[in-house]
Image: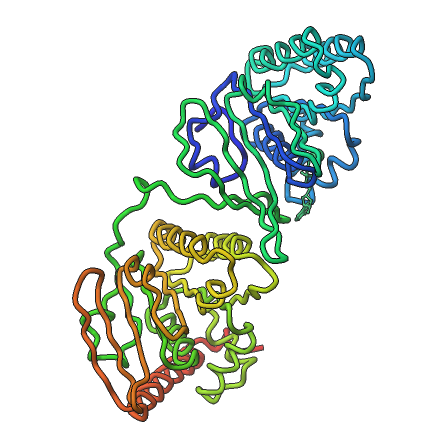
Length: 468
Ligand SMILES: Nc1ncnc2c1ncn2[C@@H]1O[C@H](COP(=O)(O)OP(=O)(O)O)[C@@H](O)[C@H]1O
Ligand SMILES: [Mg+2]
């Protein structure tokens, strides 16, 4: 177990050794970038998970608001306070240089009385501003902050504000002496907000990614970090069957190992995809999570229900291992969507994860390359979660990077009234078979029949489930 934590799962996994005792952390950013909530997360998590007392000093807000906002992102702040593991202190802002040493004395007094292991100062900017460029006052402050981690024999987290319309940043001296500097940013892409975290420095730790998207949710802060490649295992031994209707391609797709990634360029409609997933989920007794950028949850269920001749309300109960989640890409950035996908995948632990309609975010994004990078990371994360990931693309032409990166590629095209399906494992030549559209339709019917049989059988076997 680490000695101190960020309290954000992804960061604690990725930056395992970053938070040793006597580390000075600087969190900087514009107003609203998430500094206070990030620091609150660290404070409450170290208190409740590791029993480290945390002292939160604020010049900005009162305790009531601090508790309310931090609990709003799922932190158990009141509990930490009640257990004596968190102390919130609001100090008045100072206005003169003489006030500085009085303030520092006051902080020292509280520290020696409470004996915290984690201390947060939210924020150091107004104090630095009072010191201005006066070298003696600045020196005093920098020295004090620099020594803070040693004084508490733990970690100190200093928040530094960057004013909205300025790029003037008064805390730069502190950056030089800090062990960890995290810059929280929010960018507007199109008209969508994307939060990003830039790790400017972590002493004793390599930094390979500069910007990582993150999300503030009612369950806490979620950071999207690529998995460390040494943590990514080979695909698992278990296999799943995707679609026995496509028998001639069995060589490729009848044995898909958990953790493998499939890229599918669909030449036909999405109904076939939904039916296939419902079947695969049912036949393999595997949980499936279908995330659609194209259709709403209800529509997907209706389409499956219609083909099977089952009421959409009943179909929801019948295909309960198949969870459908829809995302409107005009409403959320792809980074936000990713957070949602990961949250669901980690909670539901599906064996099949489907990203339905990757062409939509690729088409709408200003930076399709970034979307692809995230998709690649999603493939690696699926591998770690021991889950097959199927990325479905409905565009005219297959996407070259996805063709190259996926373990299995299935491309279907409509040609002169025929459907031609090409499939290959990574690096192997394509095997192409064509069939008439009516023949494909027969396959679909067969699949639907098998699925319906299976579903109704299960219902009759377990009357408890179907009752009510
Ligand atoms: N429960 C919540 N769910 C989602 N976003 C939230 C929630 N609470 C606060 N936020 C977001 O967090 C931002 C404020 O974060 P905060 O840490 O106070 O910023 P800073 O301290 O950098 O000014 C707000 O812009 C708001 O959009
Ligand atoms: Mg704040």
